[in-house]
Length: 361
Length: 175
Image (cartoon, rainbow over the protein chains, first blue to last red):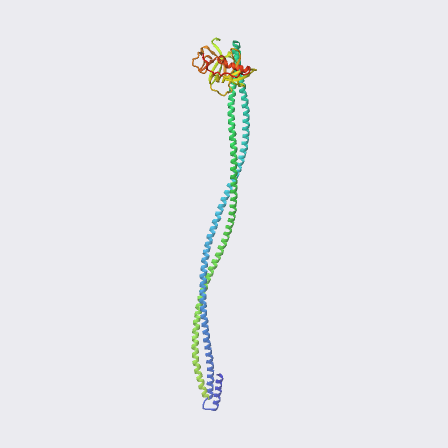
């Protein structure tokens, strides 16, 4: 087109040389200017079109941006909510951990109580064992002494039996003496007056004999009593001996029981110790967990506030983006109007160019 | 004193006190081994050896019809000498207590109602405090009234035994 314009201008210039009635110079100048104008308007139109396209693009982009920002806002809202939920959960977890910690503390205390109780029971069992072995020793001593008593009583009984034999021989002698005295008395009586003195002696002898016999029988009675007493002592001692054997058995059984208790208690104490260690460990872990939860909670808090801040920022951004979109639309409208006006102008200019060209011919 | 008092040997049988004149008793012996004699009267216990002299032994319980009782330590044999032949006879009693004096004033005549012993043999009853003592003539008890029995025993003791010796019940003879 520019070449056309140039051609038109050259023609107008040549005509102005020939025809003197038309100011060809001016026409050529006008044509030149119109050509330039057309060129400029075309360029402007082109620019307006470009601008229109650009602003359309910008609008599209800003729309996109707005959508994205909206999405970002929603996401940050979600993040905030999530962080809040997490914070709540962390709080609850912290509460639970506190409860757990309290329980563990109580368990530790209880296990300590159990520990002291088992210690007491152990001490008692030890005492029982000690007393049992003492009693056992005492019973053994008693048994030994009982054995000695039995021996002594046995000896005594046999001694008494010997004494009994002696008294029976004394009784024998006494009864023989009595017989002799009787016969002597008879003999004396038969002799008559002459035997009177002899009779007195015989009587005295008889009295002695009967006294001896009485004494001997008393001794025998006493000996029988002693024998009876001895045999009952013997029986009693034997019974006691048997009872001490029974007692020993009982003590042995209870000693065994005490030892079993001691073993069981020792096992319990060991288990309690393990339990205590585990509780301590559990308490330490719980503390760590609480610490971690606290951290989580604070992080959640932070992220919630950060998300809120982000959300606020996004809202601002969103407003800016919207404004930008509005502005770019307005620019686009302006560009469209400018373009259509430029098209109008270009049409005018081209018409003018045509007129000028025809004039130049 | 002598006429008023007499010495007796005091003995007992089945809880009853008896007395016999000390002159009738030669001596007192423990109950020693007695050899039973066949066909002897039931109250004859047997014979025994008294220092080489074989003498018959009478159980006075059986002779008096008192029920038998096992002998104890106190049982004794009184050696009584028979009037006629001066031969000794042993008499088993429950016990022999003593030689004592009884006064005539303390002695009474026997009532005629004694059933266990012949009144001939009973000389009287003496008192000693609350106790009563039946005074016996032992020589009559063993010899005079039971001559056949003692003779039979003598025969048995001295010579060889005869085939039949009639048993004589103790209390059949009357005065």
